[in-house]
Image (cartoon, helix red, strand yellow):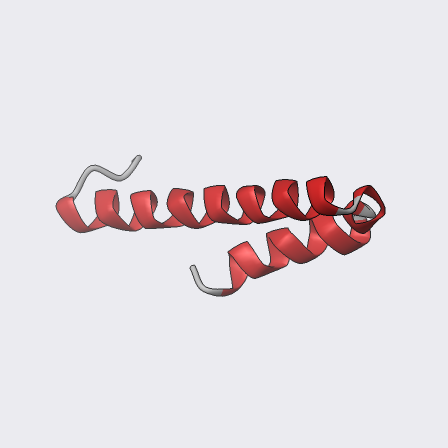
Length: 54
């Protein structure tokens, strides 16, 4: 949950060359990382209350 969003940012910003787009590449990379973080938090919440997929 901690490293996955950072890896998403790194993958989009550096490996997919988002830095070439300047500000917009940074914003897209940041939003993708935040979205990934929210996905992890939501999965953890569902696991805690017992609604995970079986």
